Image 1 (cartoon, chains in turn red, yellow):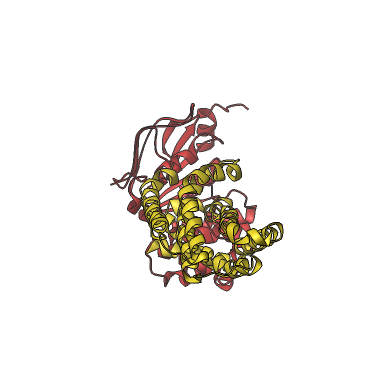
Image 2: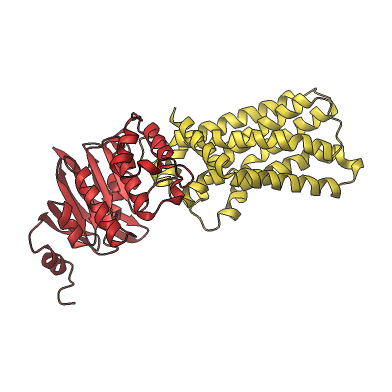
Length: 229
Length: 217
């Protein structure tokens, strides 16, 4: 079953073509890394899939629905990005409670999730007092509150130190099981850690899509034209 | 109702931080006091309705637009956009939040303003209702138009330019209704009140129908 489908997608911002004829098919249960240098168009793809942007040309479908038209299909996605979407002046519990209401989800899962992410002791603390790592863990809890079949991770490790990154990747690997995962990164090692497939994006074009091979780093360097640099 | 949840969340944050509310009350108090000392008492009764509205316009411009602006500053607006919630519900939530702020400010400022200008209000209930109805229309316009300018670097200058022409019928009608309530001559008060209510309803419907375009890409 198709989870995400992009057909001849073009996205322009003014005269700038951020995406140029992207065709991508992600089947249910696959975990795909969108790999590419900064400014390649990875986040634009994620924004199109999540319904934050409309394509200039082409078609984007998530579980057969157009995400920017159909609000209900957003119930099937959980999105984690470097931006946590958390309210600093609400507590961890209140943040999750608010998103539970938006997603019509049972609030009984909140405690379970806070415990899983090691935040139960801080549930009544304001998010503004959390470290970057804690905020990102809470952000994953927010994204999976409604148990979405599609998990989108847009450079979630940005701004984390080594320990925070390792911890987050462990959580991502755990919660990503049995879900369709789209993971954007410019870090080859991160892509290898949690994904089975890779889509390499460069200058708004999809230039490689396939299973992750052992020499991904070389493939990446070759296709993005950084060989020998 | 998800709109209620959006409003509840905003109120919880506002009552916790009191950032916007305190600023609005303080600003309203300062402008009311400045007007009261700069206008001769003999002119107070004639000019008070217009000055009262100036206070509410200043305060409203300062505070109501922050409902969306705060979401942009805290980078949480996209969190609402990716949630299964209709854009109109977000707008209604923000309008409800602003309406509650408005009522609180009105309850505090109105008696102080009347006291400062030494007004002998013949019909205080009608005065309160007129000001409230005018403010409801003003809140609807500011809440729905502020989304258009939040991404602009010149939003503070753009917002008044956009809003003043739109709220002009509400301002003139409310001033007329307040003037009548102060003098006690309620003959003909129905016309301005009907205009305020009608205009507010039309603005609300138009805002709900068009908000999706402003809210999304």
